[in-house]
Length: 280
Image (cartoon, rainbow, N blue to C red; front, top):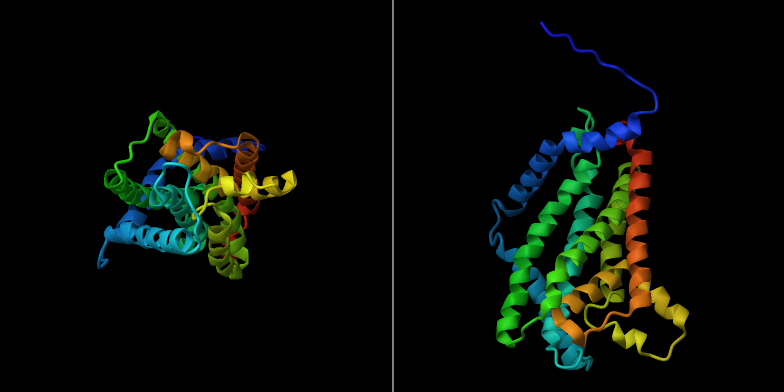
């Protein structure tokens, strides 16, 4: 008969925590698969909703900004494709941010019963948004055929900017998720952030409209502090090719904000994690 010993050592909590993330990967898969089933099971239009929602938004932006507002795209690029290339990463971010921000409260019964790294809960919720993104990407492919548009080699770098969008959503989502456990009224802040971000992000227009204007440089950097600016500009650089250049300095500033938001989100989440079971 084998004997097992449990040794509790002070100061090993942080190192064991990251090992536990890997050890509890089965729970991550289970939660992600459960969320996918809940999302698409027992729905009227099911997967089509992942296509219709961004498609309707693209049509509205095209009519309002292009037809009525006389906004134009980069040279030689159909406006609908430019909007789609901005809408897809934004839709992924907004879904992932919203799901992760409310994930802890939605799984409150799980948090109070067993031990596991709580970081698994908001991380697993992002998988559903990734599936939605893959389904919505069909819209962009259809537009390629419709406008006879062929992207160049830069589209191979698209996964890198999808990772950047994930980093941005994860960082902000972790921060709000931790706040939402103690202060439940933060659930009302999430829709406001998403709506406000939709207007200040370059979805219906190109960032060149801002960067090429004769305005103070600090205002351009202030605009670039929106982390989704770098994500959307990166997506358009990959999809639209050389017609959409990356403004390197502002792009780097946007990436730095995205990475900092991830570290800040993880730090605050870990700081508040011990009290989740007590206050949720």
